[in-house]
Image (cartoon, rainbow, N blue to C red; front, side):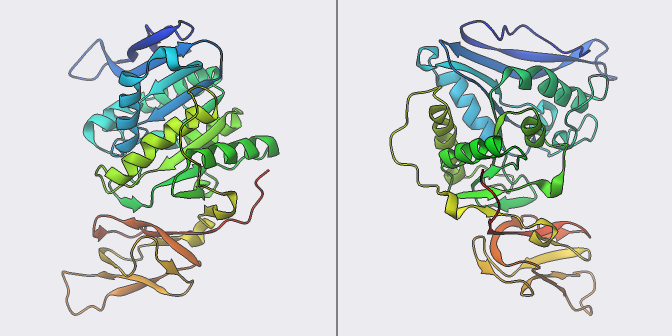
Length: 335
């Protein structure tokens, strides 16, 4: 049983803004708590939508968007319930890091969590066992973080159930990002979106820009996209303007071949801009050893056809770092 506590009443109408408190007893604070922002807006009848951001603490468009919605939304305009977790991995958010400085864990590799584990495991356990069962739909807003710049996109989490897969695709297209991409994280089951799909929730992910900064373009996409989703599910009134995302334009990261990984330590020189069309076997860039000018740079090659979807942001790399991610045309089932 979780020791987490909140004063939020999930069944009460109106707007509530508070915290989820998880007891935390480090050296500096014997009886303290990790306080995670939590808000609920409920009114009338309609579905429950869970909006989450700050899964990784160096991804900013999502937390900004959800904070604005919490402040600006009038409960009278809502039909249903919105549960907000705008900075779910609060210690990482405050530190501007992908992983928690408290226990070193990546929240998005700990689901469904452990209510008796470390702070990060307790957060994912609460989201999995308390928040997700309340929902009909789940949205996890990500960006590229400090290590990657990514083309702004809405993400389809694969689902085995054809009906859920169809509803996931419809929702992701309703987000109306410039790109729609299928990403299964190489089958990783410990992500929040994979867990939400297993729980039967209509699930939407995003990748908004990155590079450890706030992209104005990506922030605009995120703001519009979240409101588009809430309108798609009937929680908010329909938005103005046509939806341009189309099923025939869906891309995917084609498994291991979609990732170009560093084969040595050094500084990565990319050969192509984001969005460039590339071919398998084509040079993707090279890694320079700056400490030894006698050594020739090591050239990396693409293993798949497609477009440059994501690219390493810091120049410095070590063996195994993702230098480039390629997205190719998706030809799998949509229902």
